[in-house]
Figure 1 (cartoon, rainbow, N blue to C red):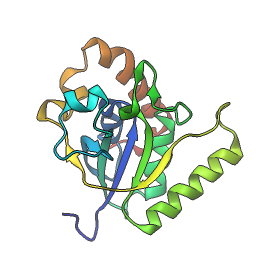
Figure 2: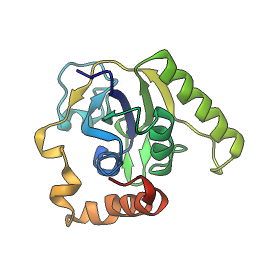
Figure 3: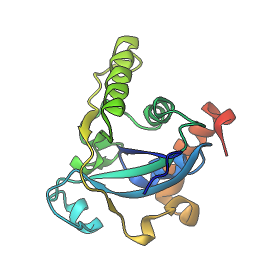
Length: 180
């Protein structure tokens, strides 16, 4: 449940370990939970999602205080930590589970996401077109416990060092004033 002082944003930008690691550090974020959304089976598991046959995206559900950070600011961070121009891929992670997606929870979130995408398209920040999907939020399935706070617990693991850490470093530099 969310309180009146809390909203939810659900975002998929490749591996959920990367996205969660950044949002865990962002001021105004109360919680970031890795999970699955947008597929066609109930209670998916990591292995089934990785097989690519469930239709789910790896996502992070971000609970935030809109008095401290806006939904638009959440999305602005999201667009700096992943490549929104690669269809069903982030780096070496390939498959529909790694798609760039914003699952909106209200008409206001939908409008904000679509407006920001239009602005980003006009600004031509990337050489290729944006492929980020904007869809209504279906049921969220939290990932298995070992995926939660993965970077915090496994920061020395090679994937974390090569993939997650550079995104966290970029975020820290670009949003230093927004760190917890």
